[in-house]
Image 1 (cartoon, one colour):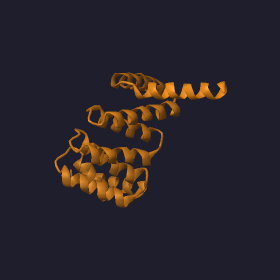
Image 2 (cartoon, helix red, strand yellow):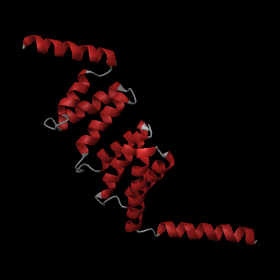
Image 3 (cartoon, helix red, strand yellow):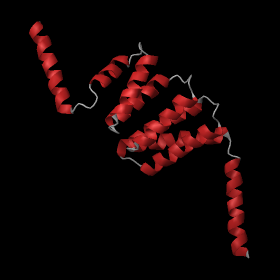
Image 4 (cartoon, one colour):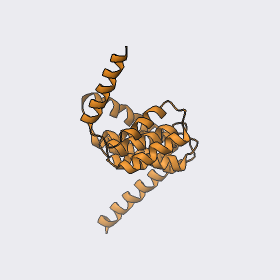
Amino acid sequence: MMRFIFPTLAFVILFFSACTETQDDLKLKISKLEAEVTADMAKSLDTNKIVHLNELYLKYAAKFPSDTLAPEYLYKSSGMYQTINQSDKAVMMLDSIVKTYPKYMRLPECIFTEAFIYENNLNDYGKASYYYNLFLMKYPNHPLAESASAGIKNLGKPLDQLIHEFEAKREEAQAKK
């Protein structure tokens, strides 16, 4: 009987302590883990810490969705997922921001980054084109607009072809001087 009561009691205590975690507690945990991950990146990549940090980011955004830090933490989570080569999850975070936080200050960068990841990491040129075009439609005067246009123009081209085209343009420009 005691073998059953103790684990059950421990679970209940852990469950309620997790439920009563305050916003400040969660921010503090995130801040500490961010510092650790940043320090670790100079030496090596600790995937477990990054995964845990992403869990905290998502937990914060789920518990406090109206807080201004919620989309910021989702944006950071996207970057962390990119760091550990989980591009599909990075895109999910960015898409969540676009759909949930239409007034987020980094919304243009979110859309552009989605396009970039689809193009360069996931090799989904259809979705890359869609997001580059969406970006240009919504933010034609944004500093990244020229890069989005170039992204569309160069979708699917192999690197050696891009280098050849760049060198040809450079030679043409030098010949005109």
